[in-house]
Amino acid sequence: SASSFGGGDATIGGSGKRVPVGLKKPSKRVVVTGGAGFVGSHLVDKLLARGDSVIVIDNFFTGRKENVVHHFGNPRFELIRHDVVEPILLEVDEIYHLACPASPTNVMGTLNMLGLAKRIGARFLLTSTSEVYGDPLEHPQKETYWGHVNPIGVRSCYDEGKRTAETLTMDYHRGAEVEVRIARIFNTYGPRMCLDDGRVVSNFVAQALRKEPMTVYGDGKQTRSFQYVSDLVDGLVALMEGEHMGPFNMGNPGEFTMLELAEVVKEVVDPSATIEFRPNTADDPHMRKPDISKAKEQLNWEPKVTLREGLPRMVTDFSKRILSAEK
Ligand code: NAD
Ligand code: UDP
Ligand code: UDP
Image (cartoon, rainbow, N blue to C red; front, side):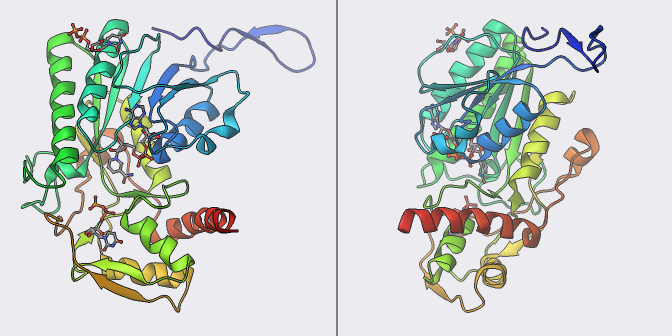
């Protein structure tokens, strides 16, 4: 259904003659759950910039009001403090479902957002994760791979929660004809990332800026692929608006060992930065790298920003935040 926001007539030039906006696409009403978080807030920036009306639902569990405060006062922006574990009634065209702590509430929140999508006929996009592949036995990972996940390990709550969320999403598609989209997101970094959530890029950057040693877990030879947040946001919007439901891998195929990542952070932040080895966590995936041929072919999407280009942009944001917090 078309949106009731925006559109209509516009006056151009000084002639005072009213002309229809015509070919301009109607703006949409969009919900972004988790929109005050790292990825969500960048997505909100993009949707508002192109004229959509955006409702953010966030309980500020890991997100921050500062991430979206620059939109306060914009009549097309609304922020609702709400836990998606509780049902909610809204009228929108699209739901980007990002809200997710690493716990079973992930499943309850997804169920509610699917119920909402079903009732109002909105399109639903789930931000799933590369963790559904577990400690993969196939490398690089294609979407057809079913994964290698320990159901009872310390990481299982997140992994299995997202696997269940994917299952629910497909059940609502098959059973209730909800139009759905699934993105499997690989490690993403950029400005506004949580400072102390323990992810490797945020840890290394914050440690190097604070003149502390970078903590490398295990032997540091495990690999990951790091995607810059603007590439991901472009991919999510292309997926929401394309004809294919996925799942689609969304990640940067560049692959780095943690030791190599520490080297890049050293180059960018501080040539005198040091590293320190720590024991690794259980069930840590040994390697991870997306095969993105499906997204390239069906969504015409691929990442553009390399780690060496993206990292300095994150460092600028982190150094500002660390300075102001530690003043
Ligand atoms: P984030 O923690 O910055 O954002 C999540 C947001 O959801 C936060 O603002 C948080 O307050 C909110 N939230 C959590 N539980 C909620 C609840 N019950 N009700 C309402 N709001 C709630 O994380 P992010 O990195 O921006 O991740 C966004 C999505 O992308 C998540 O679904 C995550 O699983 C997925 N993902 C991210 C990455 C990555 O590398 N960043 C990788 C794979 C998947
Ligand atoms: N739901 C919601 N908003 C809505 C519609 C549904 O939050 O506008 C919730 C609803 O409370 C339920 C879940 O989504 O917990 C699943 O809804 P559905 O209608 O699919 O399931 P049912 O209520 O029939 O079990
Ligand atoms: N890691 C590390 N030092 C840190 C934090 C993480 O060496 O300070 C390693 C971790 O063991 C894992 C990799 O970096 O092998 C990526 O961890 P992260 O938590 O960022 O992402 P995920 O494991 O979910 O891919």
